[in-house]
Image (cartoon, rainbow, N blue to C red; front, side, top):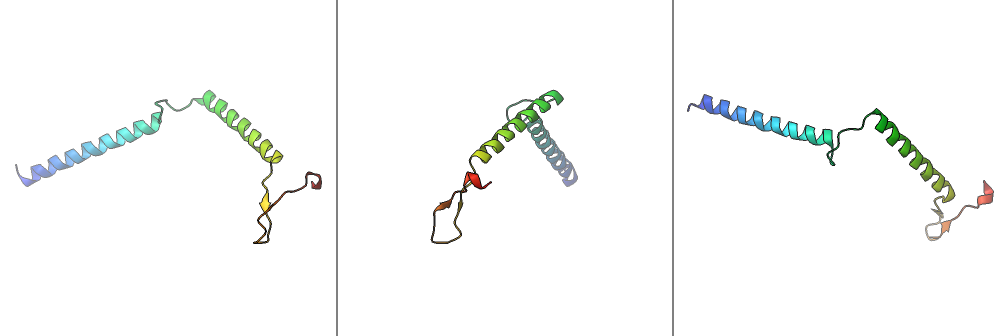
Length: 87
């Protein structure tokens, strides 16, 4: 075989390898990790409503349990708890 024919064979092999890689990545991206296709419009709305409900619950819990910050003094390592009556 001439060097030109070998070049053609190598290009075809690399093209086939690249095509198979792109197809496998596309299939994995499209169907996801669990093998399910992307959500439809109704399922997306339901999932969005569920996320909003959970986010509202997180916000409510964070209001009930605020973060206690540290005092500004480096040596005083106790936490500062805000009084609930100071709102």
